[in-house]
Amino acid sequence: MSPAAQTSILLVEDDRKLAAILSEYLHGQGFQVSCVEDGALAPERILTLKPDLVLLDLMLPGLDGLSICREVRSQYAGKILMLTANDDDMDQVAALELGVDDYVCKPLQPRVLLARIRMLLRRPEAVPSPTPPTRNEKERCFAGLRLHLPTLRCQLNGQIIELTPGEFELLWILTSKPDQVFSREALTRAVRGIEYDGLDRTVDNRVASLRKKLATGQGAASGITTVRGKGYLFVSDQW
Image 1 (tube, rainbow, N blue to C red):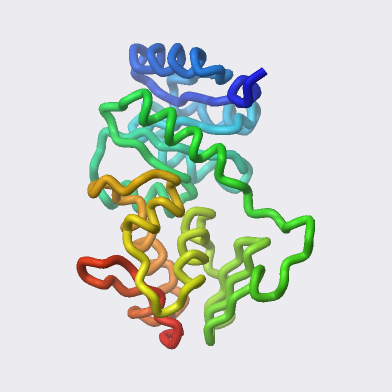
Image 2: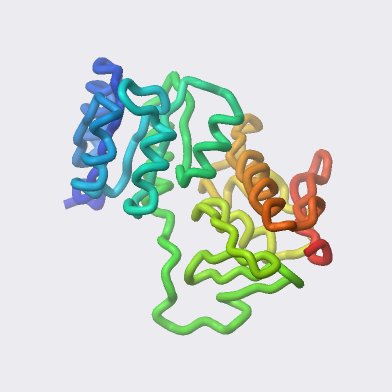
């Protein structure tokens, strides 16, 4: 039995034609696929089935995708991949802040969607290593900023900052080489497992979300800076 055959996906999509196409395609790739059309029914189905991954449409009848994610995220530990026809950056930032792991814009290309699904399912969960790591491997401190990898905990000036797994992952990468520029290409490969195509805004949106959340903890506005034409840099002495 292939690994995919053991993997369950819940597709939350009100477009019956698209749902049928995606369901058939993913079944053909060996996944177990369940579908739900009404957003109001989705939270209960997600929490009951506990699928490995949820394909969640943004615009749904009954309850929209952002509201569904807000309702279930604290109780559902699987992956959430949002499907959206809306190219609005604010919606994408809001989705990432609510715990969406990734998003794909419509119209969908099945092979691209499959690659995103496989990438998410390969992404390891942040759990303590069986072999206790050294202090530097599990915790990083920069003045008022403290990051704890095993628990994905971010603390700034004594205040807990609630980050999604994706946001913490990006911040952990940036802090791995303080005061050095990471290109969008390198960051995209690190957090998405794919090559940067010049259009993907995942890294940019996560940086925007990180800046917003860290600012609420009275973090320095220049703690994560944009280096024009090059990428992003974590400034170690701004915390």
